[in-house]
Length: 300
Ligand SMILES: NC(=O)c1ccc[n+]([C@@H]2O[C@H](COP(=O)([O-])OP(=O)(O)OC[C@H]3O[C@@H](n4cnc5c(N)ncnc54)[C@H](OP(=O)(O)O)[C@@H]3O)[C@@H](O)[C@H]2O)c1
Image (spheres, protein in one colour):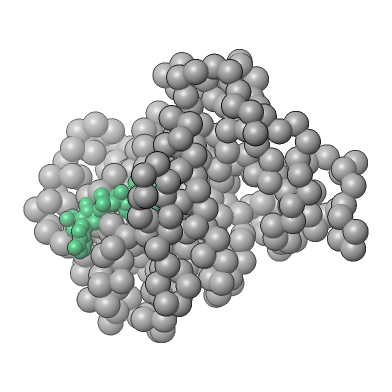
């Protein structure tokens, strides 16, 4: 598929562009300055050769030519950028991955605009576009190393079913990157806010974490009034010391809870093709993957 990326010269855009090119997508690699895009594409093609051969350097306006356009500009610039290109983005699937965060000491917090999330704000401006969100919790470095097998899950949100499915298909075309249907844009606040939580965990635990959702056993009791197939719980189980990532660092979960607390987060979506392939309708837990230097698991 032809995919445009605005602000593709940053770590997130460049990593995603290389990864999408490596699985056969044609990527319009956008920047405010086409020369900057050319330099970045040259570097990626020197590094990855054929795997990055379908990157096309261009300016952001040209990148809007694709049917699916990913906004990878810095979060502060997401709204001004969509305002600038609103005509070109009409009738397109527009993907927001923006986490507008502020850092307070060793904690990150989400800065949410009047419509409740950056994604909802973008949809309000781009009323003729179909806005979806994804990739909030995937570290740029994970996309960028094409020799690394992806380990993250990607929650896709959007009000338009067809647009959401299109992005899930694109996401699912990257091996081992599982796309999960998280519902409408109303839930974007959850992803943007959780990005702040995840970064705070990364800072406080000196790790690089992303998200992997894990199915839990059917034998666990459901909360009263809820079918077990409707339950999703958050658990952060410890990983075996044998779990290793490229480079030899130990993968671990941030917390050593052994019993997942029954915290209902959202309902599983039986229509989710990507998720149902591996998770079916079974309850799911969220596992945070990461690396750190120390080897003992952190307690709750
Ligand atoms: N980095 C991550 O690990 C990560 C993970 C998940 C989600 N995200 C999200 O992905 C997006 C990109 O992240 P990033 O770390 O790659 O961002 P970044 O490096 O701060 O910026 C990306 C690009 O935005 C463009 N840009 C900068 N200032 C601009 C302005 N005033 N107007 C328009 N464009 C401007 C620049 O491209 P040009 O100069 O070429 O135009 C720059 O290379 C952010 O919304 C972030 O929240 C990042």
